[in-house]
Length: 312
Image (tube, rainbow, N blue to C red):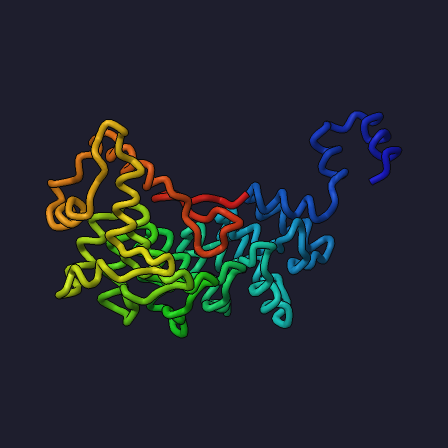
């Protein structure tokens, strides 16, 4: 809208909010209606302008924005208002991070929207830029209900790998999600000893973040514990080597270096941690809960520990 028109609107005394509304582009108005959850306004604008919801605005289409804002009613309206021959485009378009609307819903852990999108034809095995599928993302989120729901979706491939060569169980172990690991071991053929592109198996990934309870649980699945703990990754480090390195990083200078035999004892007996300063250990236990969830794409944050994170 030209400046002379805006000046004219000011001259006749229209409120600033009204002037601002008329100054916006159609895409701005559509986006604001979605963000504010104003379905009536969205209907008015889209119908009066014959708006195409597959249009890309700031890297995303209207469906992606509605999903991101957890607006189920608007999600349904956008899909119902889209021609059948454009529905696949609407559902399968990706943002700059490679996320489809279904991936965004998975990142938001919005099961109701996930189920609706799948019911109207959203593809369940599409990967984002980091190679993660929605099932891998779910296992990285820590939400066991979400994992169970997706596991039962017809046609979903639970054995896909991300760009780092990691499966769903690798991601669950990376974040110490013992409940999800337990579910995957019970219901799939995913292996704790399979390696990613850097040669890390599930024990290596758990060791990198001090998930001792998870390591103890996983060891129960094997008869020869020491043999499993001695398997090396691409850096020629075993699980014991990684734990030794991590413990020596957090010990105070006044304490003697931690030794392998102390690590082995601690794995066997959780009440016998190495002498490193217990306060430091507790602080590390808290810090690991704040590790940013990452489905596979290192360029953007996904889900924080036990929290939903709307992407920036």
